[in-house]
Every structure is written in C-alpha cells, then in structure tokens.
Image: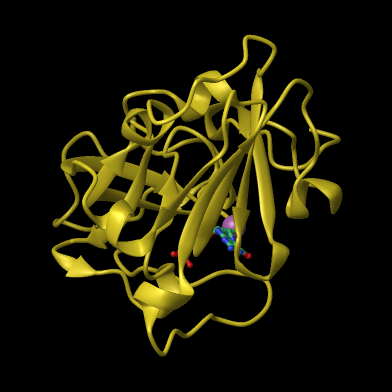
Length: 200
Ligand SMILES: Nc1nc2c(c(=O)[nH]1)N[C@H]1C(S)=C(S)[C@@H](COP(=O)(O)O)O[C@H]1N2
Ligand SMILES: [Mo]
C-alpha cells in the first residue's frame, strides 16, 4: 500500500512489496540493547570462520581500510514498513568474501552480531552484488541505533537479515536458524513472496 505523498518516486507502487507501507522515517528495530563503544578501534573486530581454509580476523582499522562504494536500495521490514531510495556507503560483501578460501561444501552463512544475535541466509544471497557491509546511511555515519560501526545490508530479503553491529561471518554446509528464525521468522524471508513467518 502506498498512501498519497508527492515526494514519492513515480514507480513507488511497483517497488513496494505486498503488505508493506512506505515510510519516510527510519524506524529503529531490534532485540536487546544498543552496543556503545568507548574505543571502537580496540573493542570491535571482525571474524570470518566456519568452512574456510583459514580463519581471518580483521581489526577495526583493517576493516575500515577495505574498498568502499555507494549503494542505493529499498528496504523492507517484516513489521510492514518499507523505505525507498536509501543511499549507503559500504564495503561490498565480495570484498570480505574474497579474503578467505571458502570450502566447496559451504552453502549458507550465519551473520554474527553483538550479544550473540545471529541471522542465516544462503551464501549465494550474501554474495550478490547488492549485499554489503554498511558504514554510512544517507551521508551520515551509522548511528548506534542503526548498527554503528558496521551493519550488514541484504536489501532483497526482509530487513531482519541485515544484521546491525555485525562482528562475524560463519560459513556453513547446512542452513541453521538464527535468532529471529528460531522464534518463528522465515528461514529465507523474500518480501515479494511475503515470507514473513515460517508458516507462510
Ligand atoms: N544485531 C541485530 N541486528 C538486527 C536486529 C537485531 O535485533 N539485532 N533486528 C533486525 C530487524 S528485525 C530489523 S527490521 C532491522 C532494523 O534496522 P533499523 O533499526 O536500522 O531500521 O535490523 C535487523 N538487524
Ligand atoms: Mo524487523
């Protein structure tokens, strides 16, 4: 559903998945508390592990030195809000995937965030050109609420797959439910098919 608003793009309706309503704001949604860092360069690191030839640990400075590019996308939250035309600065998923030799049996990834929060998705979805590690949104460094210092962004799936405060990437042979998926959310979460909950 799209309610009348002249600041919307002409193709807003066809870009809005079924059952979604557009918002101009940027709602904050998560389980648990927002992490705050006193010295982010010392407290934050990024681990790549699971089915890889050799695990990699990136320091904050090493992660920040990875190549960045601009991304533009629409995001769709399972709680029915969508937000069009987000502009991000981020590290393409491929730039991180290329840092390891992934074993051939790896077919899924688990995104690991602060406080043990997780979400799962197929490796081929995470490896898409549209998936990335977001650092800035609409020109501003991510706020703590929206995932500072780094969040995943996988815009073709419902936004709960876009882990805020991401700290690691685990390669797996089989699909395994993450935090919301264990609590009834869909294992895949395609917004165009309304894969909201596991019984959908
Ligand atoms: N670490 C973490 N990431 C998370 C969540 C969470 O609870 N913890 N919630 C997800 C959900 S359900 C949504 S809709 C989006 C919301 O992102 P936003 O608060 O930036 O809008 O973050 C996702 N990423
Ligand atoms: Mo969500």
